[in-house]
Image (cartoon, rainbow, N blue to C red):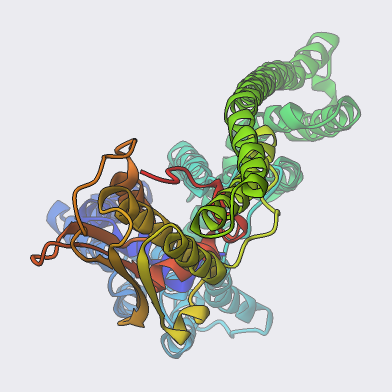
Length: 564
């Protein structure tokens, strides 16, 4: 649903070109009306131009100053009526347009007085000297004041989406404008020849043209409305009957594009009857077999064209649906291939890594029973328990690798992961100390899990590059809406042999921090030791979790880059 600003801004945001077009169209309309009424022959050409400019030029301001334009047009209508110039017919057409624009753009404190003033000016224009103003006559000024207000407020209302027809208001407005242009240009020379006043004839032609805006979205409504207008024009506005008949046949073709064959047959019978009443009328002697055949063919032609276009449109829609289905099938095949590849990788990992780790655990267990008690036995026990934990994590990782939808698996407590990592590093020979802020338990789970993995990676690097006997401090603190992780290590106690390393540890930790909008730095501390510092913001993580809840369920052990 569009808000008020979204509804009103497009109309006001257009450039001055639209203002110039509105003013030019209004001036041209008055020149057409004045030329047909004979005013151009009884008055100097320059005075006709001045009156046309006075009536039409202010319409260029109707988008920006609609209330001022309404008041101006109402006063100009009264003045032109008193002067007896035919420009009053043009102003009588333009005044409801200005009131409708005000109803669309303005508020009720301006709309109400403008509508009352427009009704009063219309009443003055309709009143003739010496003729009493009857109750029935008041319907015209009331309608000329109320109808544009209703239309403007209706267009101002929020536009709801339609399931059957794609909402493209610009195309509907273009069709309505084309219908109005066709009706006005085809009938304006005959507005003075009928029983209706010039302004009423002009508004009838404009109203008939506006029905073309309903053809695309509401073809059935447009068809029924235009059928009534054709009959009305045949009885009371003969100047517009033939033009309206052309629009009616176009709408019949559009209706045939969407309707079933049964409703198309009903529409054909209705259109044939309406066309016969409009063309033949009461002159039954004009009915001959050739003319009947021509009338039936004339009504059938738009139906044939409409059905043909409808079939082509349905065929194009079917092709698009088949293409979309083929794309989905290709995506499914690609996904199946990826799952098969993941399954192959899972088997390879299981056959290679799990086999060797399992063998290591078994040998460590056997050696534990054979070794004497003391540090050697404790080290073998730690190797055995660590191997068991690795096998458990590897089993879970392989399950996710085989089935990516297993995002609901239980998540280990990140605080326990950190404490366990510190204990294992101490058992391996480090002198690690953990300083855990109590407020860290309130941090979002995804942040704590990333921090735990950074701590694991950092302590592993300390053990690899500094060796046993190195002091280390792990700090997790909450400050300035962020979780700060520090892994500080002292200088190594002596020379040591280098351990195997993939070289991806620091890069993997930095990627973890950047994924949460944080940063990570690593380097010497100036005292012979090493400092690893990471800052993980909390506000961005909370927004990310709210936007993508699946990330909160992702097990921390699914991440890559376990050790460097």
